[in-house]
Length: 295
Image (tube, rainbow, N blue to C red; front, side):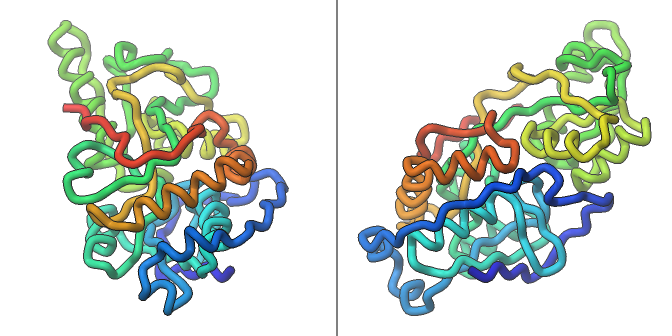
């Protein structure tokens, strides 16, 4: 199956996309005729559909030139075999453009995974296929002792600009001040590689973000980084991520059942383990599991 990206996002730092992934063959899938018959007529006529992404989100989506690699690429390749259609990939700049493209019908879905929150469910349905956590990546040895939000007072924390982690760390900083402690120096960056580079160059003490990509970046850091705060809520409710379709779209049920086939036949586990995502696996996919964004 040909994977085509229309645009690509610059990573900002060198990433060896295959360094984390084990050399594991993904099983060939049998076409499911009943599920294929549920596809909209225009997709059946075209024999293909497009999943949109907003740039590299390793180890799920690794966009390099005109190709996409990663766990999401492996899973959509297998999903396309089950549905008997070609799934191509397009890249746009930012989440608003991604959601606009999906809701306008320009793209059939975004496989993501993209964070599922109640506020986003007002305009879109989410087919959740992973669970996520928000943790810290710190320099090896964790010199500042950052293990939770309560230990961030007086430290320099990098976050993604405009994201929920930024809101959480700013609230933590306000609590620090209220408790008579030093505020958090919140450093907001537009992309993950810049945030990671800030920690590696010691301009930030930690990067507060999603566990799956941080696990990937730690694997690329030649022993310079480690994770901290793993297994804690860190200001969030249970977090789920998944594919995105327009609200009420018949594609939600089709994707849900297709991904469940991959879970049941072991392909999902094979892909997730290949990319070091064992801790993010779900036993069953579901629609709209999302909770509320942190205040």
